[in-house]
Image (cartoon, rainbow, N blue to C red):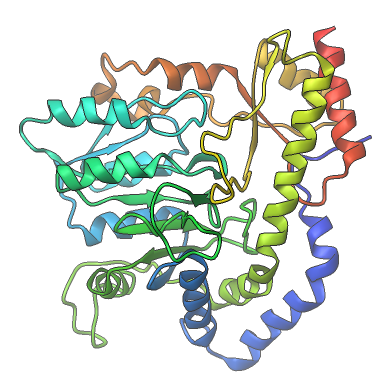
Length: 387
């Protein structure tokens, strides 16, 4: 049996006609920059996330970059974030000449730890930290209530990196969300999403979105994504070309109505894995630690962009699974504070929980079309590996 890490072909089988019709609609319209498809998606995503405004951009990375640019983050400013995330979280800070400042992660959710954040903020006596970027990693929200309390106490804007978490919900803050909790991206000043094809809501190429409750900030984002110009050729700011392609917007509008059902299937697949691993004895033998949901209740929605195990002999297990035709991946083998490009900024930095996660975690297939038979095969092979 072959079990890929992700099978977009399975999704395409029932979406292909609608996707082709959407792309054809854009081609025939000749509205190839901005236009009604982008505007429609912006409204739909904003409403889905419980936010007031959506601004489509060219990628999830550019969503983060344009948010920091709109905050006027300058060279030498500090931005507080997690050391355990995709590189873009840190990369956008470095691109602006700013300095990433890290707080270690919670070992269960793999998200930034508010207690460690407070320790960092207390030491910031020169007030160089100008913003906070929490990451909702793997599809589960960071612990936003204490994070927002810290942000308010220190008067710092929060930019949520929600690239992996569209539709995830956090139960600790009041919200008008239909799920009863606050949707990822709606709790800080802005939330940044990626529509990279592997995401739960993935395009047919690159794309991203920034959502916000703040009208003034939304207007600045709109300026920034189009070279800071309004009207045309009159530049109030120095922005960039960060526009969302209308073909991507059209494709995403086809997929958006399916998103909650895909989330539900991913959650069901996670429950199947958890049950199979419990029955296998691997959990009690402490060879495997299954993902933890750190909040309880219906208002907590983990969308399982990734299903992450913490395991012994991780690299050997990865090789064994790949040799057994089972797709798997390591997110992320090198924490951000150990990346070579940091240079002297990395000297002396140590974040034990992030480093442990980088050494011990592995992602298994979790996509909606995954069958129970495939999951049983995956678990059987892991049992076989541990003997």
